Structures are given as C-alpha cells and as structure tokens.
Image (cartoon, rainbow, N blue to C red):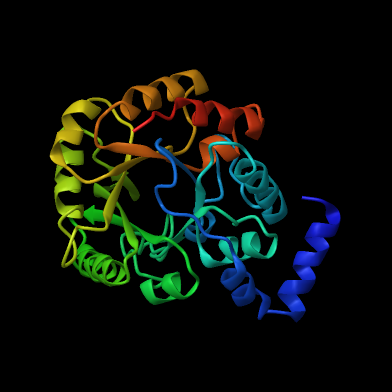
Length: 293
C-alpha cells in the first residue's frame, strides 16, 4: 500500500464507518466457481485467535499495515481467487478496494484463543451467517476442534452444526475445518494420523441439517490418499505454519492437489510470510500448482 492509502483508511475508519456497508454493497462479485481450475484462497484470520507468530518469528503478524500490504500483494497476483478473514481484516480490504471480483469467506468462530485455559471453547465471536449474507460474501469458515477430553467440544459441535444449517439456508458455502485433538502438557495437539484425520472428517462433514453446501478444509499430512477416501465433499487444503522448507511444502501440496476430492488451497502464513519474504514468488508458485478440474 501507499502511505496515502494507509492514511485514507485510518480516516475512513475514524470518521465514515458507514463506508464499510457501502463498499460491500458496491463490490463486484464473482461466482464461486468462475474458472475451470482449482481455487486459491488467502487466509488471514489467524490474529483474531492471538496467533501472530509465523515460524521462528513470534510477532510476524503484529503489524496490521504490513499484513494488509502483504495481502494486497497476494490478492493482486494472477490465480488468486479470494480471501478468508475476520470482519476487521475483510473490512480493511473492502475499504482499500481490494475485494472486487474475489471470493470472500468470513471467519466465524475465533473464541478459542491460542494458549488460553479455554482454548477448546471455540465460540462464535466473529461473523454470523446473517452478517455474511448481508455483506454479500460467499460463505463462512468454522474451526471444529474435537477435544476428546474437553466438554466444551459438545457446544462447539452444536454451534458449528447450526452455522452449517444457517449458511446453507442462505445458499452460502460452509467451510468446516475439523481436527481430532487433545491437550498435551497444556498445549492443544491435533491427531494428524490417518485414523485421527478420518475421525475428524467423519464428524465434521455430518454437521448441520444438510451437507449440500459444506466444503472441508484439511491439512496436508502423510497418507492423504487414504484420508481423503473418507469424504465425497469438496475439500480445500490448508497451508499451516511454514515450518518446513518451501520446496518440501510445495511438493506435498502438489501431490495432494491431484486427489479427486481436492478443489484447491486455503493458505495464509506460508504465502504471506515465506522465509525469504518474497510474497509474490510464493503466491505465484502456489498458483502454479493448481490443476484444471
């Protein structure tokens, strides 16, 4: 962004809050499946859960102007279809005029803050289905961590099921991100084994009164061929924190993208904060992995 863009954004935020709704109403929209290839969605909902670290950089996402600048770069690249974010981020992008002709997914439950005593309590603290519809967005994403020893999971499941139903009633995508999880030495750990992932997918895809509008969001882990046999639903691959060498990450994505259920990528930190900080190159590499469908 230019410095003037930043100053204009600050002034709009302070003095013209009505411009958010106006920008949403005026936004040019596109169909969810406007092309014949897999989708690439940029994720930017991590800070709302207190997750501002990337790899060895504990405060990488702390600077909002830098985050918006990286998002602006990513969204400008050919092959990027849209963005996933919380209201604060998406409204900044709206006011900057960066969401025309993009798929926009609202992040819904951000209440299970990273590292807190209530982390498994994934309450819906951001978008509602009604708010997503009113903003003219394309769907809602929900985290569904199934804490095998935490009673808060029952409420998470019920609330996710309600959100799936309410999104479907409005003709909107419900993007469900399921994990089979437990607390280990005070830290939430996901079971990424084939059995753990299949259990999570099996529960997540059955939430709500209909699965007609449900998409899954799952990590790329070993034995993806076996794991993906658990579902017929369209599935997007999540990128996660870039802890491995980029070449290894891209190779694993490329292999998983060839599976018939997989319809694209939802990636945030790995593309916005690559090890060499070259957002353009990282995004272009990911876009180059997408397959015709």
